[in-house]
Image 1 (cartoon, rainbow, N blue to C red):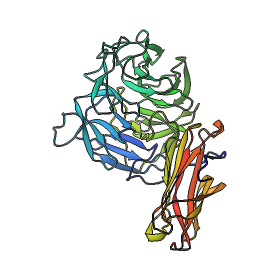
Image 2: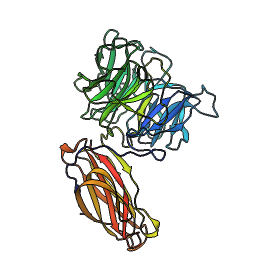
Image 3: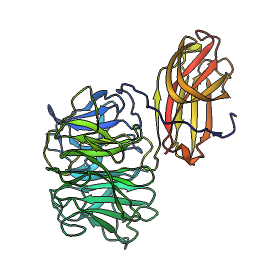
Image 4: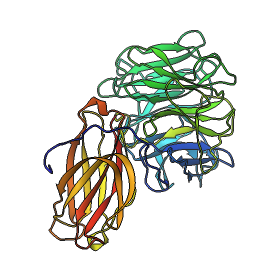
Length: 466
């Protein structure tokens, strides 16, 4: 089993784990730009609402799409001002999980439409004001050098007006949006537009004609674009009045079809996204329910379900396409699944606690790795795979897997008996499409004579195939 590929059995969707989040990034946690008492960027655990400040800018410089998480650089890109600069000296900062920040080289000023491709490229458009017309699309490359996206001829800079951009890996394209009131160029009449910009295989230029679907925004703004399961794009709209059509719409970048997805009973929505961790859409509602996070199932209307945050996440009101709600995506837009450690393991030899993790993207049909480290060298053990999270006293520690579906024998390498020297990298595959969107839970245990009761235990890991 140690050298063979592990094919995991079917599991059932259950509630994700709850954990405070002040340490390293976790896949699918929320980022909210708040303005209740000065600008603060906060981290929110979606299951519990546990909220903690990340960084306090002097001021927010960007417009729509002024923040995005970049999996390649492992941090949050934010168009803000920070000391020792003055409040209106904006840069693009790469913010780490501990709130430290480093300025991206070569950029000052305001921008919009940040979009990470997950491979080092981060697209953006410089922002000078509303209805600014077509502007050059630029991008940071993997070496942090600003490049210009070229038009089809491979020479001319490519220009478009967009408030938001989203890299869509399935079509190797950028999906952009414009809102009728806020843009100078439109797909049709003065309605909002959803633009599909095909890219060349090397990503350096536009590969063909730009297509567009008109979306009847009726005076509304498009507040965000995010990936939906199955390749669609979730479009979130907002307005200063209750217009009768849906506020959540699914867009197909291939057919350009628009399909109603949900209808939150809200006007001023300050951003929306699809949360794989919750299996729901999530919006920042800033009108009837002031400054709240609300979740919605597909087809749902009304006010949705409130996530009670431990700190305020109010954003200050006002209307424009500038959103305040974002998400951490550790594997980038190419990966629909997610992974999340939870619980506490039990130490063995030398006080070492086995560490269990998932490396890579656990999407259906994609090979990823289950890694186990920090075990006594040469130890034999069991990898428990289950359908639920648990917290049951066991061998002096906590057994973290419920509804166990498989117990897989494993053995780590390393110098036999040497504390912390044992490790294992186990290839794994979700081969059955029925597992898409399903939560799976794992924990490993090992024989260890120096553990409290002869067994050391790892942390738990929850992951979901996309």
